[in-house]
Length: 294
Image (cartoon, rainbow, N blue to C red; front, side, top):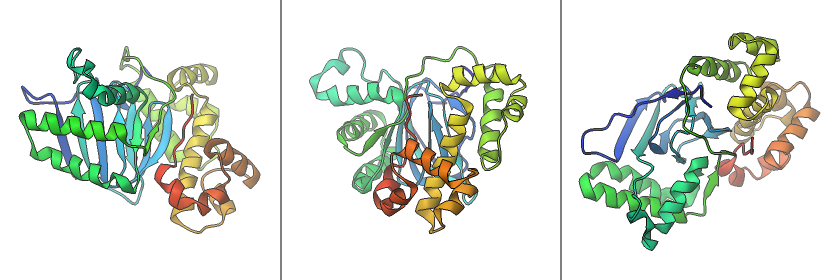
């Protein structure tokens, strides 16, 4: 994904772990990346997210660990104008070579390596970890480092985690196509309910249809229709959990032209039918994710 925007994290001198608390602010809505790893707790707000090649829905209480240079964004749904979140930015080599080889830190090292694919943590048993993450901003210097390592160790042992991206991402080479990619995804998220035509999306990217298909496949590892269907089904999951509308109505609301195709694509992506998803929403609502190898 060479086209994502490189984002600069501003830290004070002598600070390797930066804690950022945003209250009633908007998330940065554009696809971006940075060399620091990112641990984010969503306190308030919900919407769509993209991490690497994974499209999904985020909600209050979710914790995300995003590896270095993984393209990502969080975009709020219409009912939320602003959000509250706590993010921690830290270097990928936080453990160092010798320190990181200590057996006591084996779990943390494994977690950092796994974060190359981005990880989501969620569930009712995460409450203690959310509290500790909230308290992290109170500490500084060595105390912050030790408390943060303890937090990472607890996350590493948590059974309530889901790897998101289907592939790791190398350091991007250029930012020159950043606006193009963000324009494309902004168009897809605003138009997924409509009959999206390849020619129209290619026009947004200022490319011919054939050139756009090559461009999009190279950057995302997926075809345009695959990404569009993931966006639609992600929104369908949210609607199935949120209300009691008939499945057929939801299928048309998210952009499918017939219920049969919707049911087929939903089962293909989620592994269950829309009806079964709704029946088991207390389970699925915690971990409804689009997971594909790309």
